[in-house]
Image (cartoon, rainbow, N blue to C red; front, side):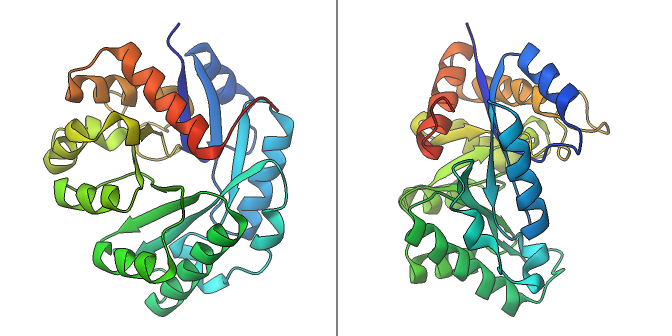
Length: 249
């Protein structure tokens, strides 16, 4: 049986129906991601309610101006399996870059201290992202979520021992450089995600995304790598389980 794992999503306030639809599509696990203290707390509470849902605790670069107060305390909960999503977003600059850089560095330190994986968001800030990572020390388990770079960026991520997590963007024909990078990513370093409710894959672009659509991402990765669907599903699911250190609750 082909089984999938959505390693990065933002579940809705009442996620029962979307989780049920995903399970029917043979999605067996979900990592529900926090973007500030409040959403991290909410993600943690959802993870307590569902046996196949886990959560992260972190501050998205958009929210960096809020700081990281309270995040470290959440990392003690067994349902919280990673720090993040943390990183830099120089496209929107919703928070000052100085705050983004500081809060990113603080969360890298949290991941290293707690021995938890780090989930990275980076947009139009590759050079600075690598600089801060190298300065603070790349956590043993690090993933670049919703990877949007090309082959050069992929090479730099992989050189640091990181995983690449691919989203519905790989189904967009205009994303040529990303699709090329995805086609060459070593399968033992690849994961898949929806980043729902965002980044809905083809053929449902324009509609709200949900975890069931991770199957479409997996299908496209299989096409790009010219590998059997079963091989992609098995590898990306096992990678997620290993990366987050997951077993049965």
